[in-house]
Length: 272
Ligand SMILES: NC(=O)c1ccc[n+]([C@@H]2O[C@H](COP(=O)([O-])OP(=O)(O)OC[C@H]3O[C@@H](n4cnc5c(N)ncnc54)[C@H](O)[C@@H]3O)[C@@H](O)[C@H]2O)c1
Image 1 (tube, rainbow, N blue to C red):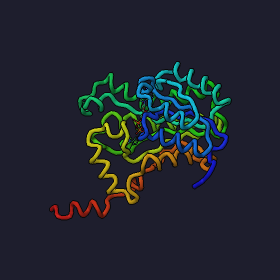
Image 2: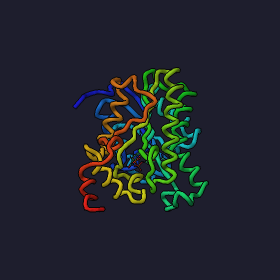
Image 3: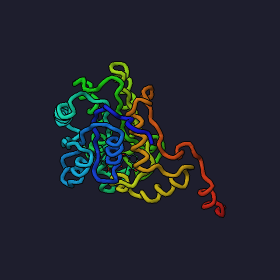
Image 4: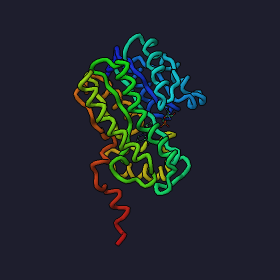
């Protein structure tokens, strides 16, 4: 295991809701690798209380912020800068939510107010995090910003509905802001396209078990776990990936480049 990959680095980790969250695992890995960071989540998620246990374990604080509120983000950055004693080397956007999915609305029957909420929470908030960071000039040179995506941005997964459009927007924002931040501060911006993962956001999607098992059978390495994703995120925050930017990086055990696997062929072999 590598050691101290993030020694001396400071940052912000959004989205740790409970111990299954990708952000939760990332916080533990980042701490293990020597980073100092502040945790944040929407005020409503704070009520669950679990994030305070994580903060204790990571020897840090939690600053509530709704990632769709520019005002909250400004306050978050100011307070985090004071607590950490300097500007940031990394930001993790690990945020997603769709009221249409929560309420079982089909893609042909979207409630558009809710769809706007999905896009704002799951994608535009990534832009807001970066715009506020740029305006405050709060990123250190050669810093790294990561968001989390899903392959439904490229291919149709019928039950992913408006989140697929949100992820396509998120990936586009990573390219658009990656260009700006690369030019101005040598800061890189990437999205990681993660395997289906058993978390609150993941398993809330209709048919999750089926597409989790399907992806696991197709991928030569099997589905990537939340912990493996955390390790990949840490590598992207480290100095070993300094020239990687504006990319959507598949972290999916090979799923995205596999047409069919023997396991799936066997399942369908007796069908004419
Ligand atoms: N679980 C999967 O199968 C999977 C696969 C690919 C990508 N992802 C992405 O990974 C990211 C993290 O999700 P997860 O799977 O760890 O689930 P999770 O439910 O643990 O995390 C989602 C987080 O978003 C936070 N959030 C929601 N609205 C917010 C707001 N307005 N402001 C701030 N935070 C808000 C929630 O409180 C929660 O902590 C999401 O972008 C998700 O779409 C998940």
